[in-house]
Length: 144
Length: 144
DNA sequence: TATTGTTATACTCTATAACTATA
DNA sequence: TATAGTTATAGAGTATAACAATA
Image (tube, rainbow over all chains, first blue to last red; front, side, top):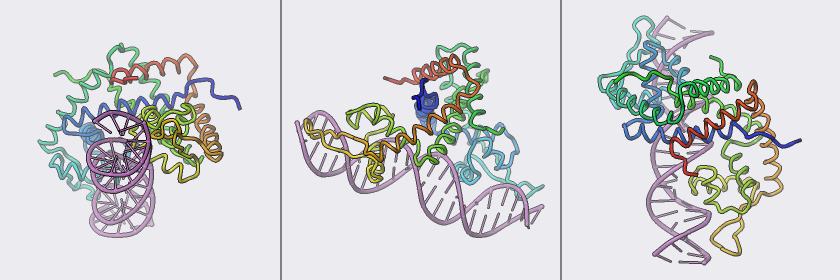
């Protein structure tokens, strides 16, 4: 019955994420990308030869949603999907040279943005923040 | 030219916010609401007699977007908009009794969710996290 | 039958531009 | 002319359900 006697951390998190996310999306936009595009390229690069289901799970979206983004990226000539000869149900996603270029360009933007984000933080503070965020994810039941 | 030698804090923030946001939205959904609805009701309650422009700014959305949400809430009978007699351009947004009830119900959900979110954190850690988030907002140029 | 991925469709949140009404 | 708000429209991201191909 008593009102909350502490600042709602969820609200603060939400506001921060929206603000930071919007700024990041703008930066990616200037580099010819968007947040889901960046996440997709990054995940494809870092999880070589993963199935699309695994990629989608790693990004945190549904398979059909990933298909949607992959369609856009393939249409733009940034990647190709090949059937795996071993198991022809699964597709192997691979970046084209143009896709590799785009990846590097967006990575530049991401790195420079992250630098801006870290202003005034030392390594230890960032590590603490990261741990706190991880704990928050655990508290809402992240499975991985 | 060297690769980033620290974990990208933006990615961690993004992943956390999406996960936590989804869980919160589910909780609000079970209480018959949604995140923007909750933010709208909360802001209307806490900023008595603010203009819609001010409300929108406080929530962090455009005026037209707020109008969209207010339309839904008014259609649902949760609030009314009255013209201010002093300046008939501005509208005064006021919760109906049903709106007050909904507000309380969603507040319950928000409080219980926040409690879940705080599991394993002590007050000092939450305060530190909150300060860190505020600093991140500052780093991407929050004006207020 | 089970699994991988796609297509079709729709919903939510958001935004911009043009408009109405007040001042 | 300037300001408050609305309407019309659109776009991005996401999801679910039904489907096709493969195992």
